[in-house]
Length: 155
Image (cartoon, rainbow, N blue to C red; front, side, top):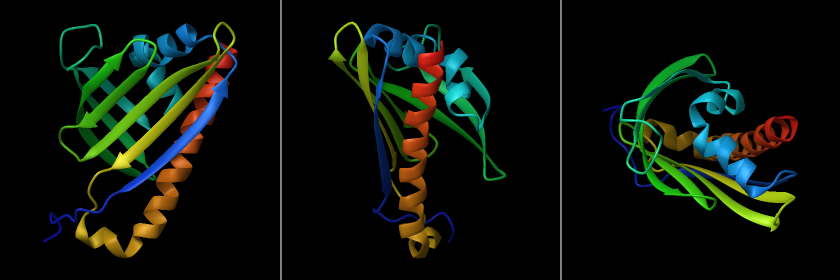
């Protein structure tokens, strides 16, 4: 009964300008993903590349997270890896998608990053809490972009 899902999901987007050139921002997020992902997402407890290095299109990654005291493990796949433009990964074991979109606002100075997190399906028992879940996902997306800005500007 608890495994049943609805077609409804939840999503949140955060957008921020980082005072670093696009190449630095992309490298921090995508190229140095394994070093930096636990820094901007401190819920990460374990992170393992299941495919041959480096991180690239179709790479598989396993992560263990602790969110609000709850441990979860998932595997995700890199579904888009466009240098300087976009990094997207999608859950293989759970229905979610994370996308990082990069745009140069001033080519050698600033980069706009747009982060979107989507829960693609909600379990039926979650539907009464859909509004709260949407708020939490939106706040999480904004927190992610703030964390990225702070870390990248300090590096």
